[in-house]
Length: 502
Image (tube, rainbow, N blue to C red):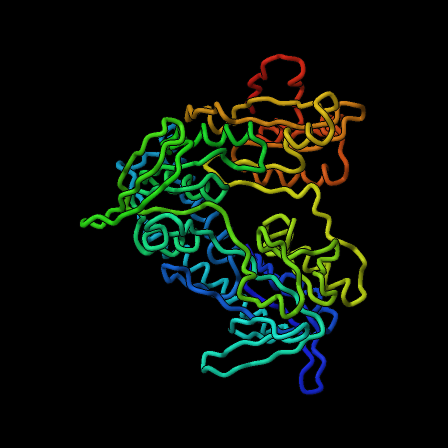
């Protein structure tokens, strides 16, 4: 999720402006390193423009993460978790009125108001740090110049010594499917709906698909996920299967091996979806109030006229080719975030990459961004946090005979009194088999997975071994301590035990 921006180090009317990137708690990738450059006394311009979604959804300054990504997603995820906690409350002595109802409009208004406050905060910080902000859609004229059209229709040319492209990506639409563009929505729209989406078909198996399906189910909606193939491609597949098992056992329906072929709007306003069942080979049909496409994202590079600047892209995915210093094929033009080839599509990596780039440009450091062992979390109803290699990646890289995997199921203490099912609460640590058994990856499925993973990510980043983790004292009674109690190896053939926080 990145801010749609081009950050410029300007030369105009004899004044020398140097590029800086700016970041805030919301996570604005395109301006991520402005604070660092600002402290060095540099001057910057940020060109930012949001093309409305096909449904007409617009948003303010701050990029995907702030407006239609991480921030509203986490808040709606939390809304769903609150629903589960309310259901547990009577087990802990709280008398909660029945039935328990959810008001989409009230939640959406609160979330949207918070996002708008972040938009305002970003504008204020840009002004405070004397970053020149242009709300225009820019494209390249040559290697040092971009052109934009103001709201008044006036052409604006900006010349720069350094240019940073951080335009991010937008959700992909399957335009070959009849009715997909006319009647479907994406994550660009779901967080800004004024009314509940109702019975929803989520098409896709990405983390965006599962996160949206998870919180929509959690607030009581009828949700179906249609997956063409495997869930969470690129993540550890054992963990991915446990994620979908948990979702399925808690009300989300899954259509596996199915591909939509047509969407039609019925006279009553419902959407009739036709799909091909890849397993049976038959055609099937269902009706929904909303169809949400979550089938991947495409980088925002097509309208930048990169060819006029000589910036090379990967023709297969339209991403910008960069080197270890974030430089494109033109040394003074850089690309960070989702728009860059081979980079994790994560806000924090782009923020750090931007800060380091600013420091390198202005002689404060030579440090490069390290993209290894970057932690992340999928905010499904049962959260999945991971850092390092998946089991599949470890085996492919080192060979099955050189990999040891320690694992265990566990039961969070909070689940005991409420008698919650903990069948999918699971941890595994992927290690090299040879001493000192360097930890290659950690995978955690359970409550507060992001908080747990963040802590252990530091140790893994510092080269922790299995023995060092086992010598770490756990905090009792927490789910985190289950990581330092992993004793059972998959190679032993033994069944993992339920250790429990109690």
